[in-house]
Image (tube, rainbow, N blue to C red):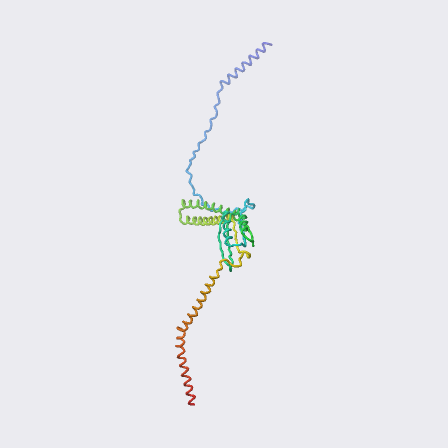
Length: 303
């Protein structure tokens, strides 16, 4: 039994040794050579700069005004008619009120109807002091005859002007870029003039919009009060101040003297100028009448 086991071990060892010997002596199979890929030569040429197409001005639609604006722009106006004791003092008082509130007088006029003195004024006051100005001016009056106030909302117009201004300013920038490109590339006078005319027209529209916006801003910042001043009936004196009867007497005497002078002058003209002309004209006529009558009498005598 032990001998059989030894024999099997020796046989196994022999087979392993033989296998190792055969593997060491066998020729190695060379690995197939790798294929060498051809290297592509890329020639990079200089990029040719193509002229960019001339962009046309982009027409933009105006941005619609906001429906709910945080701050409304109101142009406030008031018409006020008052009666006062003294028109001159009321005019000076209204001017002092307006200037004290930071406003100014646009126009002022005083005129007479008969012996009564009236006045009209146009006042501009800061919008935030509008109510204060009305209250202080009414305090100068004996009676307020008429008062009305209006407010014109220009918010939508102002927002629309802002949108149009933004669009025109963008168009102006594009036209300025276009003008630069035309000058650098085409260098044609007619192309440059065409773009310049469009740019000038856009600039004019921009200035008009800015002027309108500034006008609305000034009207919104300063409210307008149209004031009419009349003397109160009860405050009119029975005898107007400044009545001077001696002056009236002197004026009447001057008028009488002028009338007498006119009569004397008329008599002088009648005697010196008119009467000789009448004599010169009447003498031939009288002579002719006399001759005719004489001839008539002779004929009657003969008959």
